[in-house]
Amino acid sequence: MPGQRSPGRCVPGHGPAPRCSPGRRPRPPARLAARCACCLRLKRCPDVRLRAPWGGPPDSPGSKACPSAACRQDASSDCHRARFPDNGAMPPWPDIDTVLLDMDGTLIDLHFDNTLWNQHLPALFAAVHAIKVEEARERLYGHMRDAPPSLDFYSLDYWATYTGMDIDALHAELDHLIVYRPGASPFMAAVRASGRRAVLVTNAHPKSLAVKDGKIGLRGQLDADFSSHDFGMPKEDPAFWPALAEREVHDPARTLLIDDNPAVLHAARGAGIRHLMCVTRPDSRKPHRADLGFPAFDHFEEIAPP
Image 1 (tube, rainbow, N blue to C red):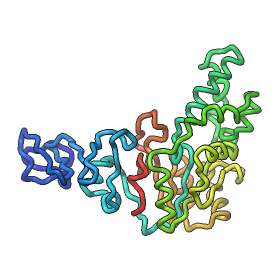
Image 2 (image 1 turned 180 degrees about the vertical axis):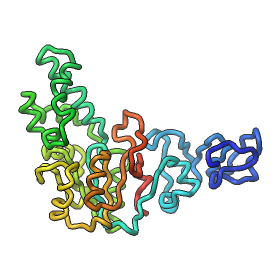
Image 3 (image 1 turned 180 degrees about the horizontal axis):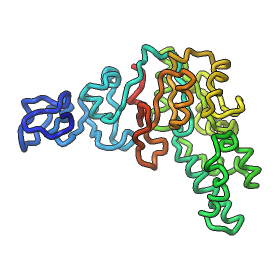
Image 4 (image 1 turned 90 degrees about the vertical axis):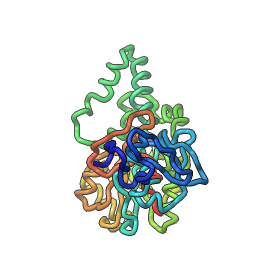
């Protein structure tokens, strides 16, 4: 069975059988990514131009992407398996004309928003009202815990009114945390260079989008951008997607949506969006997620168009 240790035999696609023998760790050829059951998951760049260890996450020091387009495209190749062992599926790029991209947790590291809303704002709210941070979180978010998805949850104006605090200023205080997720910027460039449209579709409030765009120049890397606030409904609402199609004309059967929120992906599927992908690690400071119900990836290099 693939992945099990088998004396004298390599897992298919993970190395040459002659170099595998019971109780022995073979030395991999310089030009081969040897990663068989006997090799104990040895990871080495198969491209002699790099020779970089790939044991860490994609964005760790020393980790580099294989420059081979064939490797990125062929999910069964040794190089791809060594670099991206958990990749669920490569998008069928010949069948895709439009790529719809979420912002927070997809293109941009969700660590910024998690820090702002889960730590910074509750701490300030607790200090103002002389309460514990845990109680502050309950006062802030308890009333929305069981409510259906609403634009209020994403609205900076709503939270400014609800808390009596300058939410815009809090964004500015933490803007050093606004960074792209691994490979996001090159991915957008690759999509557009391939002749496809790269379109931002976000639940973020326009003010939040403006702050992030001002920090990293997001809009300049896209063909169009849309906030669900302009439609009066969040992306989790099935009615959002037909409304979007009226403003951003696309063929749902030839459209790829990438989002870190499975609820959004389910709504889009119901509206006919055919190609759907999720993100395993929206926040770089948190562990990877599993069992998301959709093909999922971490680093955008895993799914970049050839």
